[in-house]
Image (tube, rainbow, N blue to C red):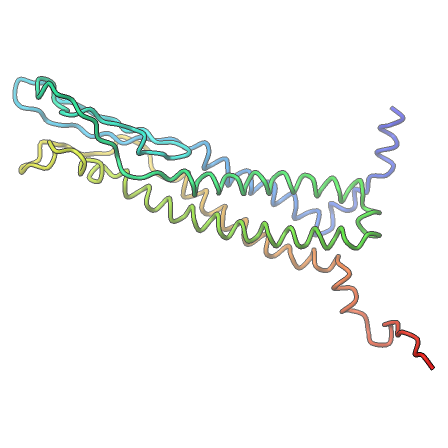
Length: 243
């Protein structure tokens, strides 16, 4: 109990009411939404091959989820039962692990950093204000993480666009020889939800970028760089001149 009382005594709850502390809680929430909507998404695409009369139709499903490596899924050909006994495999085009994983990585790193920053503001506020290098480091790290959000959100937006393209049934059927004849025996359709979850992840990605960039001003005001520049000329100490 004594240790708890000591910790509570040094805690500065007022720090979370300041912009630098309050915005950190906003950053925590939107970072969770950004990486959770990406890492938790899953869906699938189905298409049916209308086989010759007397033979059952064959429905194929391609599932995709984080980290969206759709080229790991394989289809056995021929699709219709009773066809050629020699089976071969075809794989859909594309893997989008790099942009999706980097996006999730940025979200998790920023989430952890914000938690650490809140702990620093609340329990080590005196050291934060007395040691000028701590606010400077906080400001510089926030610049780097803002740049990460720019790169991560942009890369994942491009990756999602391609993911939508190459998981379309027509794009998948392009790899299937049986679907290339005219008239095509393949009945292509979605039996799945939409990409709303991933669209939301992109929105939260760029929202994180906006919030992080906006927070830079408040962090800059805590640094000695701002304090020195904001002093009137008469308040700046002058070096003694040598005679």
